[in-house]
Length: 269
Image (cartoon, rainbow, N blue to C red; front, side, top):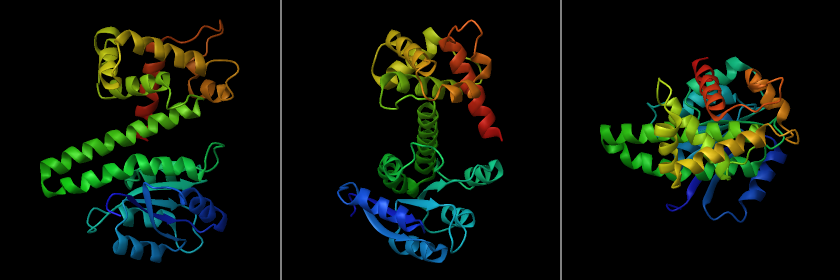
């Protein structure tokens, strides 16, 4: 089990429990330590099995997923897992409370692409990293380094989800280039020069040439603004200032800047 990602699922809907169990049947990277719909039992299972990751449904019949979240992520506890929340709520106050509590990522059950397989991909992405983070707790410097790495992973995951909402595929190079361009620009207060600073940073991250980064971001814009994109209405709603009467697509700089503004506002709420 040491080589696997240990997982606890806190979900009280039988259909959801069965769906997760089915997805995990042939899964060699994840070790399921328990499925429960009880808040009390969830805390007991965390203390007993110390799972790397907990999938937590916010709407529980027995107990409250919202109150369970800070208990799971409380740094004073001897052991705290990485928490992925699944929910149907659209209440902004509730979502902000979850982020403040240190939830790793929130999966919206209302979105068409939601499913156990999608959530389990998030488990895989974060589980192995969590093992490394705990090894670093022996020293403050190591712990801070791992905490910074975790924040980076969370932000990259959030940006990937944003791109998927716009109809892009996270595995494609055009999406990855745009994700990393927004990420690196978010790390700087002043706008970076695309050609001299930003594109080379992304190119180094993705092991390609700066010119290739520029072309791929352009490709991502063309894909998102394509009239055949089923998510086009969401793209327009998310970036209304980039919708031009002439039909002209936004530039790379315009979209990256708009994305940075969106993410900073989102995290400032």
